[in-house]
Length: 600
Image (cartoon, rainbow, N blue to C red; front, side, top):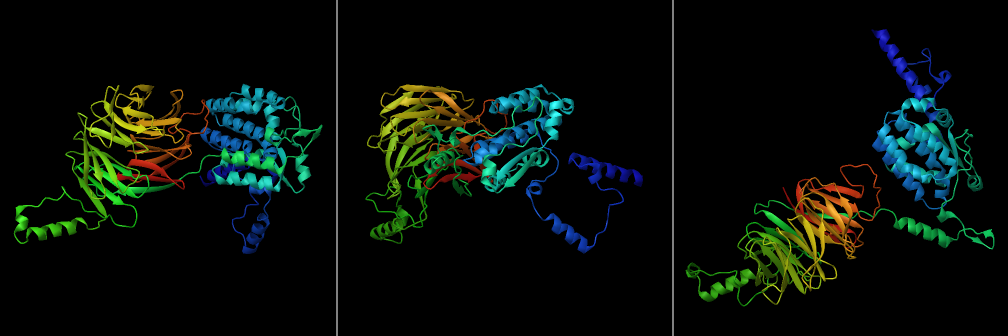
């Protein structure tokens, strides 16, 4: 039994060395195996091996990995090389084809036929040069591991290592990318099939050719380096001129602008011990106040600055009621003085009470120290004076619960939407609505003003989004496609895009000019309650009942044939909030994302 176990170990070791392409003479024999080594021998061997070179810096284990990892790592490598600036792009571009071919062959060798064919279809169009076409046709005919092992052209291609001369700067530039993320499979291909020679002479790199042995009917030419259009110098008077510093700077600036957007810092406000039941939260535009709407008909306002909230006096304070029992020990004038002193005390929070049902939404005006607007289940909208902390106006017009309210950027008017399937337009001076927007067949759950204040978007339980003309009161766009109620809307600051989300856990980004869907973003596992664009209209933030903030790159172009997954490729990052449901999102200056929600 012991002997068979040792034989099994030796055969495993032998197979390992064969995968690493060691010849039998280099394999350790049984008699050479030493179970003990002296400290001196170990230190000498360690010092000898510590002399690093290009080859052992890329040395790794044999190639392994699933099809998705192979595809993702090659896609990242391709984007890195094609997007590199001169002179890195020119030196690194010849690596693309051998990386593509060996990745495809390894996927076939691992029995991943269907993913390998999709990989070939997706990336083979990158190599349109004539010297690649004959071998790409050979690769396309392969269907199984047996074909890889028996096809003459493929055998010769894999036996001859691809040799490339790189400058020291280009080599370190490439290694920074390979070490930045999980590029294990690409490193393994480098280890087995590609040899990098780091040269000091810049002229040797610029004039070098890929010293790959000629393969019959595989590569017709040995010159594989082809400059990109951005790196080709202009021709003046029949002579090719060197690119100027301004040209290289312009190319570098363009490459930087095309990079993925920078992720924001997230400032999250969590409501704890919300026994009253938090319905929603809002942060003022000047980032100085935070409000929370609760099911016990109250609204709480916090000052985000270090100062306390100071209450000013009013001629008639309806929030204080003096009863007859208060006169037992005090005279009337003394009671008034005590009520006055108590009302002017500074506190950390201000509690606004006046609604007769759960308060669903609140909005600050531009000056957060003046007024706050709120809507409730009692079908009313109230305007609160934050100086005196009292109710200033009561707006009546809806026949059922009011779900949302929003204010125009100029504080000229505000809009509300209700369970009565309508949206209404108001001014602060009149307590009745100016206009009603009728067209939805179910509850109107959310609304938002366009940045130019001439249009209004509404989302409804009838699974549609309507785009209204504020002045005319008619539907300009009817956006259909959601599979559940639409609960969140957000316009991009440039006014060209509208994002919508809700119960179907999908985020749709609409082109307002054509009314078509630009993006269908998937990734949330529960209802989405909040959306927000950044100032550049390139990043979209979303959050909801899955207790996670997700950031999306709206400007990213994706391949329609890309492999389907749980999350869309536009996803930049996901940031869980432990157990807090998201109810508010808004971007602030200096690339800060403000978020708020209650712990579940």
